[in-house]
Amino acid sequence: MKFFFLFTVLFSAWLNYAQDPNELVQSVRLKLEKVKDYTSDVHIKALVPMIKIDEVDAKVLYKQPNQMKVESKGIAILPKQGLGELNQFLSNEKAYTCALNGSKMIGDVKTAVVSVLPLTENSDVILVKLWIDPVKDLILKSQITSKTNGTLDVNYYYGSQAKYGLPYKMVFTIDVKKFKLPKSVAADLHQHKKKPKTNEGSQTGTIILQFTNYKVNQGISDAVFKSN
Amino acid sequence: MLWKNTYNEFVKILAKPRSYIGLAALTLLILIILFAMKADGRMYISFVTASFEQTLSFNGNILNGNLIAFIVLQMLIVHIPLLVALVTGDLLSGEAAMGTLRMLLTKPISRSQVVYSKLIAAAVYTLILVVWMGFLALIVGRWVFGTGDLIVLNSDGLVILNYADILWRYGLAFLVAYLALMTIATLSIAFSAFADNSIGPIVSTMAVIILFTIIGSLDVSVFDYIKPWLFTTHMASWRSFFNDPVPWKAIWESVWILLAHNVVFVSLAIFQFKRKDITS
Image (cartoon, rainbow over all chains, first blue to last red; front, top):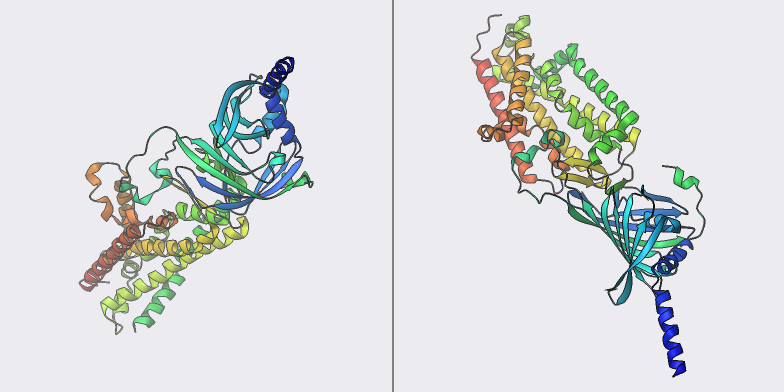
């Protein structure tokens, strides 16, 4: 009986420890911090309203603390936030506080939903929500709400680089503000053939990044990030 | 005789200093645009992408030779008609003003053939203008800015065309732009057949272009039935080659309308020139 009581107390203590949101985020952060630098090939597929673009192959380069570069022969469209900014935001643990918002199933993984609130008033980020796999210390989904960029949802899929917290696929769901240009600017000849009006207000787009050929912690010169 | 007379007409065009004004102005304008883009092209790009830049980032060489050529075409296609009319508006009326028309008609060549030879010479001159513009915009533009995907702003949004999928579009766009400029050339030749001075046909041609352009840009329903039939509406149809998918039906419609205008203007010129009383 004593043994059972002791086990119950220890198990519940362990559960509480595991579900401590700060500890969860710290575990994720420590995993991400193992990556000093990386390069990766990336295939970009952008399905954004009002933008027509073919799929593009590019190369991503990253170096701690916050150097990131995308090299592309053609024009590549990426979300303004979410590629390296989340890691950067999480890296300063004194700049935010965490709160547990329960759990949610993503696929067959029970994730802990953690809200991360910035402590500085002038932070562009208003709220970050993370869906964390507590067993593997991986972010499976994030939602970043910022003053300038609205809300950005990102789903992460992991493969061989999961030990570094690097996904093989990221799916961004972004808010795209409605934009319309005057006829005189666009000089669109066939605009007199009126098209049906699309919904006003915000629309969402999807950008899918598929990473291959990761090279982690092999060293990248700072000069690479300075050149255009 | 037609070809010999055409050759003579072309030599006459080359002998006039005003024929070089167009080429010089075109060269200067394109060089100014290239310089401006080199100096502050990023600002122009941000104007194009501003609506999206809160959410998205555009990576890669956006300011490239393909975009420069597109900007040049868009900016100059409005002004080149003046350069064309400056030369072609003078072809018949200039002879009348100088008193050389009677001498010209003493040759064993019909009046229709005189108009045809002047028309062919005008077509060659217009072709030289378009090819020169294409060379400066596309070849020099690519040499200065490099190549890359083309970002095109339409009223519906942005179309980003792969760099490997662009050259054929430019080829066809220049062809349609050439057809549009030929419409200006034939219009000015038609006016030229009615006049006995050089300035009248040139000014009349520009007046018609301005009038039709204003009617085309007025968003008033009463003009909705006229707009599709104005040649000025179809002068920008070269731009449609940079849509994805290409609106082939609309482009063919524009080509037919421009061709029809050409036929009408040439017929009008021949009709008037045949019945013209040559008094000088």
